[in-house]
Structures are given as C-alpha cells and as structure tokens.
Amino acid sequence: MGGLLGSLFQSSDGGTTWSPLKAETKNSITELVATGKGLVAVGLDGLVLTQRAGGAPLEVSQRPDRAALTATVIDAGGKPILFSNDGVLAGP
Image (cartoon, rainbow, N blue to C red; front, side, top):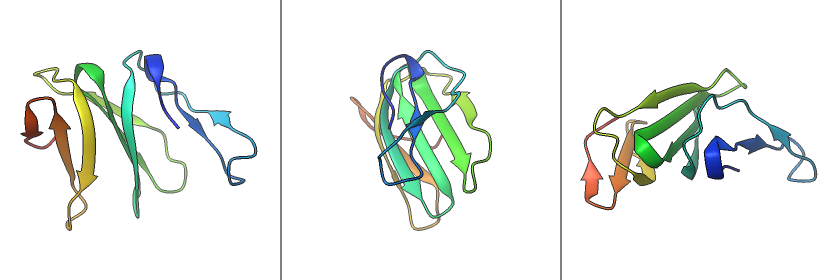
C-alpha cells in the first residue's frame, strides 16, 4: 500500500498487520503494481520505485521531465508502461 509523501507499507500476513518500507522519497505514490519479479510504484514529480522479489531494497528514480505519473502496467516483456495526464509516456 502506498500514498502521500512516499508512504509505503507491506503485509506478509494477508493484511492483518502492516510494516513501513523506507522509500527514501517525499513524492506521493499514485499506483503500485505487483509483478512476478517484484513491485513497481509510480507517483508525482516523475517518481518510479522498483523492488525485486524477495524483499530487496527499493530503487528510487525520477524521470527527467518530472511528469506526474498516474498509472503503470507491465508489458509482456516485464517492462513498465507509464501513464500521466498527458497519456502514455516512454519508459522510465
């Protein structure tokens, strides 16, 4: 679960309890997508977070255009397709 000011939490017991993840960002998260290889999150100010399966540390990046990202889907090759209010954007 993610949200305002980079808040990010995970549950390993089906949502009974939640633990915070250190996202190292203050940009709000607008969407999270679980993939077979981990997690992808996008957010305001061009925020792209990725985490590999197994609880690896979060990798934080920011698009140079700082587009407000509103959604993401994962393509057949496992790469994220990013969306903003302006539509589909090129990769992260």
